[in-house]
Image 1: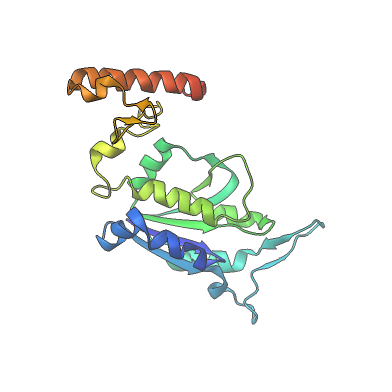
Image 2: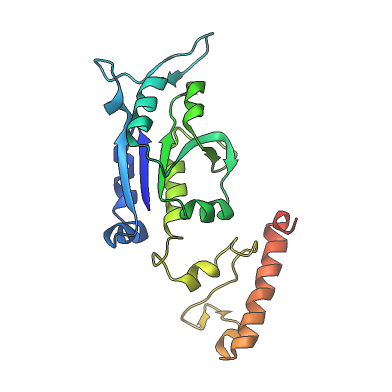
Length: 220
């Protein structure tokens, strides 16, 4: 898979790309991630990419020219263009799975007061990571990229991903490690029993219980 990200702040991605599972996936050749500065596509002498909005109002708006030129330069036949936007489709695990089968994702990060409405015509999909406002789409693009990359074959073990929250529309079950007794808080006996079927049943019961308590909306 290849992921290209268009942003005004490329340095924000340094830590994201050079730590943990994402770095290992890149080093193993499972994914290629490229960060492009939108300003590099500006035709303005001062690399300006934003301006005041018509009709008045506070804040600066991203102009269409640099982003249109960037997308037209990077887009191929198999490219799927995503616009990070609070008005987009809510990002959920099923969508992460769908995107993990794409060969090339091109993600546009908005910033400032927003982007010229005509930029929406470039996108195959708009995605929101939640009902709140960020200063820009950079963090949101990292969330989407991280969630998608870890679903690529051999990035993490298949067993690890299958048992995670939301994979079965249930939250994950409780997990424990050593010591067995920590300050009077003990590991449930069933997990020490070695009886795999009983452990499986207990974990499913805990998933159902926890989901009912914390996310009853998932049962709907």
